[in-house]
Length: 445
Ligand SMILES: Nc1ncnc2c1ncn2[C@@H]1O[C@H](COP(=O)(O)OP(=O)(O)OP(=O)(O)O)[C@@H](O)[C@H]1O
Ligand SMILES: [Mg+2]
Image (cartoon, rainbow, N blue to C red; front, side):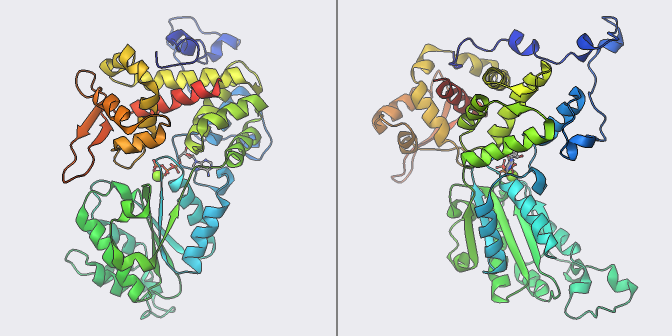
């Protein structure tokens, strides 16, 4: 059994906790009538009244909405009010833009808070009158489409050749009108952008790691080079999943001088505590000291996990109409998360994970889960050995190879030209599940 703390979370364990408001209400509808189907607790207008103003209002529906708002783990933070910590990274980012006039690459693990940081940074930059343009890259992202869209958002009034007293017609025009009909070329674009006066433009390319098109990446590097050479008032901020700068932008010596690379690392415990503090203020709930440290320990620097586990634990307290969130809520909430993640896996993989061979290899698998936090999920035997103290690379290699045939947890790609073979978890979600169940086991000690 992969859940190493106590009994595995059963369906009964989670369903028992599912809110059934009418059980406590006065007008319980007749069982079987359409009235008994679950309903939304609060209207979509998100009106949380006093709780939003910092005055907790513990009506269950409102507390639940405030909780969803304060500790949602599925969305980036978009406002400063919900954003915890990250002072140093924010200061470094501002300095890179304002003092060094550099282009910036923000890199870090999946879910570590890059997009949230960029949203809050954008808010700050807009207050300083920067024109911030945001684009999220997809696998299909094309340079031409993306940069035409950006140019459309830059009013022509910022063009050196247009008078501020220009007529009405000029007010509605944008820099896109200055681009030719053919595909946008980075040099042409830098020429056009170098005509910007009266503001500074920051172009954010979020999720840059997802860009599959090599030409897009080449064009972006070329654009950075040309913008820098012309001292244009346009700066690019690229963000993406990577463990270092090269991984995200490739080997591009020509633009190294013009780029500042900033790592977004794990959050400190005090910063994670701040996330929980803010949730307490918004909801009126209180995390007991033990519950807090359990969440922080299991989150291990991840704001995503701190929010997810905090949300689940607090939800259980709300279900019981309690204001205090205790250790048992955290453990129960985490087990429920693990059960959900587990049931999201293909049946066959679920049963593979129960096999004795797999359970015996637990420490190596946990280390592999840690090593798999690369943008493409591939890792080598040495990456795993670094994570698994006390295991020789040869033992690790043998263990991983044991899960390629009949028990096919991994894909293996043979190393060519003296390179190491690399491995990857075959099924998405397995590494995440292993990581959290190991954290739960550790936290319980
Ligand atoms: N500074 C912060 N304060 C509070 N919550 C945060 C902070 N940073 C991130 N989070 C939370 O962590 C989760 C992941 O954040 P975010 O989406 O910004 O990460 P990311 O690095 O962009 O992820 P991905 O690699 O998937 O793009 C979200 O639920 C977000 O609300
Ligand atoms: Mg992101």
